[in-house]
Amino acid sequence: MAAPPAQIRQCEGSGETSRRRTEQVWDTLTPQELHIAQLAAEGLSNKEIGARLYLSHRTVGYHLHRIFSKAGITSRSGLRPVLASISRPAD
Image 1 (tube, one colour):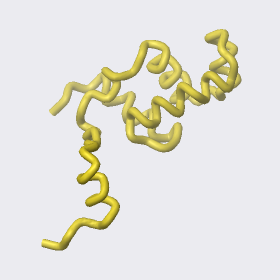
Image 2 (image 1 turned 135 degrees about the vertical axis):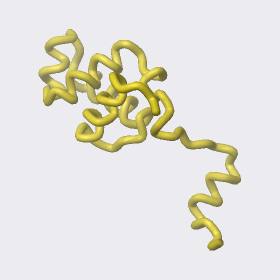
Image 3 (image 1 turned 180 degrees about the horizontal axis):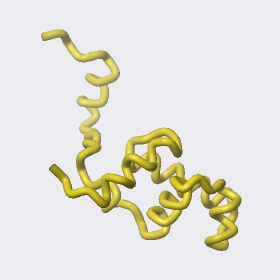
């Protein structure tokens, strides 16, 4: 077996662990974060989400950044598949 890349070895040495995507990531979100994720997945802009929830668009952006980090995704396009997994039971 080949040795893992240097980046992976570095993370292993730090004691940090990564969350598996099959784990219930959404259990770690606040109700506000979940609501923002749902609205973003529907295609609303930060400004539109902010107007609905009485937040600034920058606050919405902050929440999305935290959501992406918790869910292990990098863009809004990753929200829909992960949100869909909420309604389906885990295998």
